[in-house]
Image (cartoon, rainbow, N blue to C red; front, side, top):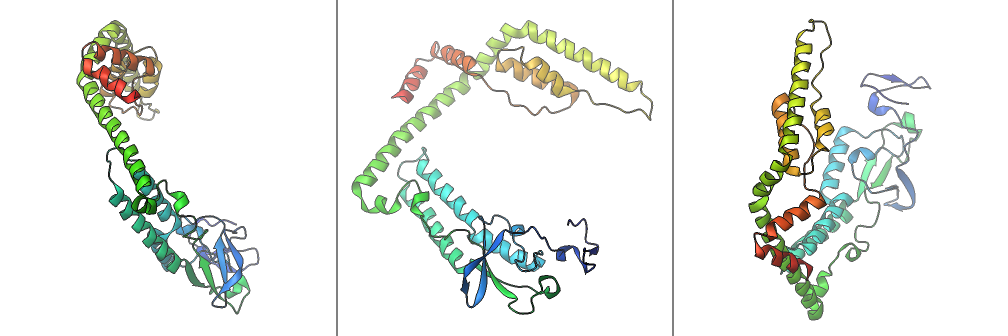
Amino acid sequence: MGCINTEETTTECNKIFTCDEVPDPNYNFLVKRDEQKDGLDVYRPTSAVEYNSQIKCPLCKCRLPREEYYKISDILKASGEAKLNQLFNKYNREADADNTIDNIKDLEAIYNEIQETIKNAEEKRYYKHTCTRNDICKRTQNQDVYIDLCFEEPNKDIDKNLKVDLKKLKTDENYRNKYLSDKKIAYQKYVIRQKIAQIEREYRDEFEEMTFKKEQNQYEWATRNIKDAYRRHCEFEDRKGPMDIRFEFPASQEWYKEKGTFKYSGTKKRLKEFIEDLTGKSINDNVSMGNSEYKEFQKYIIEREPEYAELLNGLED
Protein backbone atom coordinates (compact mmCIF):
# COMPACT_ATOMS: atom_id res chain seq x y z
CA MET A 1 0.00 0.00 0.00
CA GLY A 2 1.46 3.35 -1.03
CA CYS A 3 1.75 6.60 0.83
CA ILE A 4 1.12 9.95 -0.85
CA ASN A 5 1.81 12.56 1.83
CA THR A 6 2.39 13.04 5.52
CA GLU A 7 -1.28 12.96 6.39
CA GLU A 8 -2.51 10.07 8.48
CA THR A 9 -3.24 6.91 6.50
CA THR A 10 -5.73 4.19 7.45
CA THR A 11 -4.50 0.61 7.01
CA GLU A 12 -6.68 -2.36 6.14
CA CYS A 13 -6.78 -3.35 9.81
CA ASN A 14 -8.20 0.12 10.63
CA LYS A 15 -5.15 1.24 12.60
CA ILE A 16 -3.91 4.77 12.06
CA PHE A 17 -0.25 5.35 11.15
CA THR A 18 1.65 8.34 9.88
CA CYS A 19 3.34 8.16 6.49
CA ASP A 20 6.69 6.89 7.81
CA GLU A 21 4.91 4.29 9.93
CA VAL A 22 3.15 2.55 7.05
CA PRO A 23 4.76 -0.91 6.84
CA ASP A 24 5.95 -2.20 3.46
CA PRO A 25 4.87 -5.86 3.31
CA ASN A 26 7.08 -6.43 0.25
CA TYR A 27 10.28 -5.19 1.91
CA ASN A 28 12.86 -7.99 1.85
CA PHE A 29 16.18 -6.19 1.39
CA LEU A 30 17.36 -7.23 4.86
CA VAL A 31 17.45 -10.94 5.63
CA LYS A 32 17.92 -12.51 9.05
CA ARG A 33 21.19 -14.41 9.41
CA ASP A 34 21.68 -17.60 11.42
CA GLU A 35 24.41 -16.08 13.57
CA GLN A 36 23.78 -13.51 16.28
CA LYS A 37 25.86 -10.66 17.64
CA ASP A 38 25.87 -9.88 21.35
CA GLY A 39 22.83 -12.14 21.65
CA LEU A 40 20.85 -10.06 19.14
CA ASP A 41 19.50 -10.99 15.72
CA VAL A 42 21.54 -9.79 12.73
CA TYR A 43 19.98 -8.74 9.43
CA ARG A 44 22.22 -8.54 6.36
CA PRO A 45 21.38 -6.89 3.01
CA THR A 46 20.81 -8.97 -0.12
CA SER A 47 23.08 -6.66 -2.14
CA ALA A 48 25.50 -3.79 -1.52
CA VAL A 49 23.94 -0.83 0.32
CA GLU A 50 24.30 2.23 -1.89
CA TYR A 51 21.72 4.54 -0.29
CA ASN A 52 20.46 4.91 3.26
CA SER A 53 16.88 4.78 1.95
CA GLN A 54 17.39 1.09 1.16
CA ILE A 55 17.33 0.40 4.90
CA LYS A 56 14.04 -0.10 6.70
CA CYS A 57 13.29 -1.72 10.03
CA PRO A 58 13.42 -5.49 9.41
CA LEU A 59 10.89 -6.09 12.18
CA CYS A 60 8.04 -3.70 11.38
CA LYS A 61 9.01 -3.03 7.70
CA CYS A 62 8.66 0.72 8.26
CA ARG A 63 11.08 3.53 7.47
CA LEU A 64 13.54 4.41 10.19
CA PRO A 65 13.42 7.71 12.08
CA ARG A 66 15.10 10.54 10.19
CA GLU A 67 17.99 10.89 12.64
CA GLU A 68 18.90 7.23 12.10
CA TYR A 69 19.09 7.77 8.35
CA TYR A 70 21.52 10.62 8.95
CA LYS A 71 23.75 8.30 10.99
CA ILE A 72 23.61 5.53 8.38
CA SER A 73 24.36 8.02 5.61
CA ASP A 74 27.49 9.18 7.44
CA ILE A 75 28.66 5.58 7.84
CA LEU A 76 28.09 4.77 4.16
CA LYS A 77 29.93 7.88 3.00
CA ALA A 78 32.94 7.11 5.14
CA SER A 79 33.14 3.32 4.88
CA GLY A 80 30.37 1.87 2.73
CA GLU A 81 30.91 -0.63 -0.06
CA ALA A 82 30.22 2.09 -2.62
CA LYS A 83 33.08 4.11 -1.09
CA LEU A 84 35.34 1.07 -1.33
CA ASN A 85 34.46 0.52 -4.97
CA GLN A 86 35.25 4.18 -5.68
CA LEU A 87 38.68 3.70 -4.14
CA PHE A 88 39.29 0.49 -6.12
CA ASN A 89 38.46 2.38 -9.31
CA LYS A 90 40.69 5.28 -8.25
CA TYR A 91 43.60 2.88 -7.64
CA ASN A 92 43.13 1.15 -11.00
CA ARG A 93 42.86 4.46 -12.86
CA GLU A 94 46.14 5.53 -11.29
CA ALA A 95 47.72 2.20 -12.24
CA ASP A 96 46.56 2.71 -15.86
CA ALA A 97 47.47 6.41 -15.98
CA ASP A 98 49.69 7.07 -18.99
CA ASN A 99 50.71 10.63 -18.09
CA THR A 100 53.14 9.51 -15.41
CA ILE A 101 55.81 6.82 -14.98
CA ASP A 102 56.88 6.29 -11.37
CA ASN A 103 53.60 6.60 -9.47
CA ILE A 104 54.19 3.88 -6.90
CA LYS A 105 53.89 6.38 -4.02
CA ASP A 106 50.56 7.57 -5.40
CA LEU A 107 49.33 3.98 -5.55
CA GLU A 108 50.49 3.42 -1.99
CA ALA A 109 48.57 6.49 -0.78
CA ILE A 110 45.34 5.19 -2.34
CA TYR A 111 46.01 1.69 -1.01
CA ASN A 112 46.40 3.08 2.51
CA GLU A 113 43.09 4.89 2.08
CA ILE A 114 41.51 1.59 1.06
CA GLN A 115 42.91 -0.11 4.17
CA GLU A 116 41.63 2.70 6.40
CA THR A 117 38.18 2.48 4.81
CA ILE A 118 38.10 -1.28 5.32
CA LYS A 119 39.07 -0.82 8.97
CA ASN A 120 36.23 1.70 9.44
CA ALA A 121 33.80 -0.59 7.64
CA GLU A 122 34.63 -3.49 9.94
CA GLU A 123 34.21 -1.29 13.00
CA LYS A 124 30.95 0.38 11.94
CA ARG A 125 29.26 -2.24 9.78
CA TYR A 126 26.82 -3.37 12.50
CA TYR A 127 24.24 -0.68 13.12
CA LYS A 128 22.13 -1.24 16.23
CA HIS A 129 18.46 -0.41 15.73
CA THR A 130 15.60 -0.53 18.20
CA CYS A 131 12.11 -1.04 16.83
CA THR A 132 9.54 0.98 18.80
CA ARG A 133 6.46 0.03 16.81
CA ASN A 134 5.32 -2.92 18.90
CA ASP A 135 1.74 -2.69 17.66
CA ILE A 136 2.93 -3.21 14.06
CA CYS A 137 5.59 -5.91 14.43
CA LYS A 138 3.73 -7.73 17.23
CA ARG A 139 6.93 -8.04 19.29
CA THR A 140 7.15 -6.86 22.88
CA GLN A 141 10.62 -8.37 23.41
CA ASN A 142 13.82 -8.57 21.38
CA GLN A 143 13.20 -5.17 19.87
CA ASP A 144 16.92 -4.55 19.46
CA VAL A 145 18.55 -5.86 16.28
CA TYR A 146 21.76 -5.32 14.38
CA ILE A 147 21.61 -4.21 10.75
CA ASP A 148 24.74 -5.25 8.86
CA LEU A 149 25.59 -2.49 6.39
CA CYS A 150 27.98 -4.75 4.47
CA PHE A 151 26.83 -7.23 1.83
CA GLU A 152 30.27 -8.83 1.57
CA GLU A 153 33.19 -8.97 3.96
CA PRO A 154 35.04 -5.64 3.58
CA ASN A 155 38.49 -7.29 3.38
CA LYS A 156 37.45 -10.09 1.04
CA ASP A 157 39.71 -10.54 -2.03
CA ILE A 158 41.00 -6.97 -1.92
CA ASP A 159 43.95 -7.63 -4.19
CA LYS A 160 41.72 -9.30 -6.79
CA ASN A 161 40.02 -5.93 -7.27
CA LEU A 162 43.35 -4.19 -7.92
CA LYS A 163 45.18 -4.33 -11.25
CA VAL A 164 48.62 -3.93 -9.70
CA ASP A 165 50.00 -5.76 -6.65
CA LEU A 166 51.44 -3.04 -4.44
CA LYS A 167 53.25 -5.49 -2.19
CA LYS A 168 55.10 -7.00 -5.16
CA LEU A 169 55.88 -3.53 -6.47
CA LYS A 170 57.73 -2.84 -3.25
CA THR A 171 59.40 -6.23 -2.75
CA ASP A 172 59.78 -7.90 -6.16
CA GLU A 173 62.39 -6.10 -8.28
CA ASN A 174 61.47 -7.90 -11.52
CA TYR A 175 57.77 -7.14 -11.03
CA ARG A 176 58.54 -3.48 -10.29
CA ASN A 177 60.89 -3.12 -13.26
CA LYS A 178 58.30 -4.64 -15.60
CA TYR A 179 55.64 -2.26 -14.28
CA LEU A 180 57.88 0.80 -14.70
CA SER A 181 58.96 -0.33 -18.17
CA ASP A 182 55.33 -0.65 -19.29
CA LYS A 183 54.56 2.73 -17.75
CA LYS A 184 57.45 4.31 -19.64
CA ILE A 185 56.15 2.97 -22.96
CA ALA A 186 52.63 4.20 -22.14
CA TYR A 187 53.98 7.61 -21.18
CA GLN A 188 55.95 7.92 -24.42
CA LYS A 189 52.78 7.24 -26.40
CA TYR A 190 50.90 9.72 -24.21
CA VAL A 191 53.47 12.41 -25.14
CA ILE A 192 53.09 11.50 -28.82
CA ARG A 193 49.29 11.77 -28.60
CA GLN A 194 49.64 15.18 -26.96
CA LYS A 195 51.86 16.39 -29.81
CA ILE A 196 49.48 14.98 -32.39
CA ALA A 197 46.55 16.77 -30.72
CA GLN A 198 48.52 20.03 -30.68
CA ILE A 199 49.27 19.81 -34.40
CA GLU A 200 45.66 18.94 -35.18
CA ARG A 201 44.47 21.99 -33.25
CA GLU A 202 46.82 24.18 -35.30
CA TYR A 203 45.40 22.92 -38.62
CA ARG A 204 41.75 22.43 -37.61
CA ASP A 205 40.47 25.93 -38.50
CA GLU A 206 42.34 25.93 -41.81
CA PHE A 207 40.93 22.52 -42.73
CA GLU A 208 37.38 23.50 -41.76
CA GLU A 209 37.57 26.65 -43.85
CA MET A 210 38.75 24.62 -46.84
CA THR A 211 36.02 22.00 -46.47
CA PHE A 212 33.35 24.65 -45.90
CA LYS A 213 34.09 26.16 -49.29
CA LYS A 214 33.29 22.78 -50.83
CA GLU A 215 29.81 22.86 -49.28
CA GLN A 216 29.21 26.61 -49.16
CA ASN A 217 26.52 26.71 -51.88
CA GLN A 218 24.63 23.87 -50.23
CA TYR A 219 25.01 25.58 -46.83
CA GLU A 220 23.63 28.89 -48.10
CA TRP A 221 20.67 27.10 -49.67
CA ALA A 222 19.89 25.34 -46.36
CA THR A 223 20.19 28.51 -44.27
CA ARG A 224 17.88 30.42 -46.63
CA ASN A 225 15.26 27.70 -46.33
CA ILE A 226 15.55 27.65 -42.54
CA LYS A 227 15.38 31.45 -42.34
CA ASP A 228 12.25 31.50 -44.52
CA ALA A 229 10.63 28.76 -42.43
CA TYR A 230 11.42 30.68 -39.25
CA ARG A 231 10.02 33.92 -40.67
CA ARG A 232 6.76 32.20 -41.70
CA HIS A 233 6.49 30.58 -38.28
CA CYS A 234 6.91 33.93 -36.50
CA GLU A 235 4.36 35.65 -38.77
CA PHE A 236 1.84 32.86 -38.15
CA GLU A 237 2.36 33.01 -34.37
CA ASP A 238 2.04 36.83 -34.39
CA ARG A 239 -1.42 36.59 -35.98
CA LYS A 240 -2.74 34.42 -33.17
CA GLY A 241 -5.07 35.85 -30.57
CA PRO A 242 -4.27 36.03 -26.85
CA MET A 243 -6.23 32.82 -26.13
CA ASP A 244 -4.66 30.75 -28.91
CA ILE A 245 -2.06 28.09 -28.23
CA ARG A 246 1.43 29.13 -29.28
CA PHE A 247 4.20 26.86 -30.51
CA GLU A 248 7.96 27.28 -30.53
CA PHE A 249 9.91 27.00 -33.75
CA PRO A 250 11.24 23.41 -34.07
CA ALA A 251 14.91 24.37 -34.13
CA SER A 252 16.21 20.87 -33.33
CA GLN A 253 13.95 19.38 -35.98
CA GLU A 254 15.40 21.69 -38.62
CA TRP A 255 18.92 20.81 -37.46
CA TYR A 256 18.45 17.06 -37.65
CA LYS A 257 16.71 17.40 -41.01
CA GLU A 258 19.64 19.28 -42.57
CA LYS A 259 22.78 18.00 -40.80
CA GLY A 260 22.84 14.69 -42.68
CA THR A 261 23.11 16.45 -46.03
CA PHE A 262 26.62 17.72 -45.18
CA LYS A 263 29.82 15.69 -45.17
CA TYR A 264 32.09 17.89 -43.11
CA SER A 265 31.86 18.65 -39.40
CA GLY A 266 32.95 22.27 -39.90
CA THR A 267 29.92 22.97 -42.08
CA LYS A 268 27.67 21.17 -39.63
CA LYS A 269 28.96 23.30 -36.75
CA ARG A 270 28.25 26.48 -38.71
CA LEU A 271 24.74 25.29 -39.47
CA LYS A 272 24.07 24.43 -35.83
CA GLU A 273 25.34 27.83 -34.69
CA PHE A 274 23.25 29.55 -37.35
CA ILE A 275 20.03 27.89 -36.14
CA GLU A 276 20.84 28.61 -32.50
CA ASP A 277 21.58 32.28 -33.22
CA LEU A 278 18.47 32.62 -35.37
CA THR A 279 16.04 31.05 -32.91
CA GLY A 280 17.75 31.66 -29.58
CA LYS A 281 17.35 27.97 -28.81
CA SER A 282 20.18 25.61 -27.84
CA ILE A 283 20.48 22.34 -29.74
CA ASN A 284 21.73 19.45 -27.61
CA ASP A 285 23.90 17.61 -30.11
CA ASN A 286 27.65 17.16 -30.47
CA VAL A 287 29.35 17.63 -33.82
CA SER A 288 32.52 15.64 -34.43
CA MET A 289 34.51 14.23 -37.32
CA GLY A 290 33.58 10.85 -38.70
CA ASN A 291 36.26 8.31 -39.61
CA SER A 292 36.38 9.22 -43.30
CA GLU A 293 36.66 12.95 -42.58
CA TYR A 294 39.36 12.36 -39.96
CA LYS A 295 41.43 10.36 -42.45
CA GLU A 296 41.07 13.21 -44.93
CA PHE A 297 42.10 15.63 -42.18
CA GLN A 298 45.18 13.55 -41.41
CA LYS A 299 46.16 13.45 -45.08
CA TYR A 300 45.73 17.23 -45.24
CA ILE A 301 48.15 17.68 -42.31
CA ILE A 302 50.71 15.14 -43.57
CA GLU A 303 51.02 17.10 -46.83
CA ARG A 304 51.98 20.18 -44.79
CA GLU A 305 53.65 18.79 -41.66
CA PRO A 306 56.11 15.85 -42.12
CA GLU A 307 56.54 15.47 -38.34
CA TYR A 308 52.86 14.57 -38.04
CA ALA A 309 53.35 11.39 -40.08
CA GLU A 310 56.31 10.41 -37.92
CA LEU A 311 54.23 10.86 -34.80
CA LEU A 312 51.44 8.69 -36.18
CA ASN A 313 53.96 5.98 -36.97
CA GLY A 314 55.27 6.29 -33.42
CA LEU A 315 51.88 5.24 -32.05
CA GLU A 316 51.95 2.07 -34.11
CA ASP A 317 55.34 0.93 -32.81
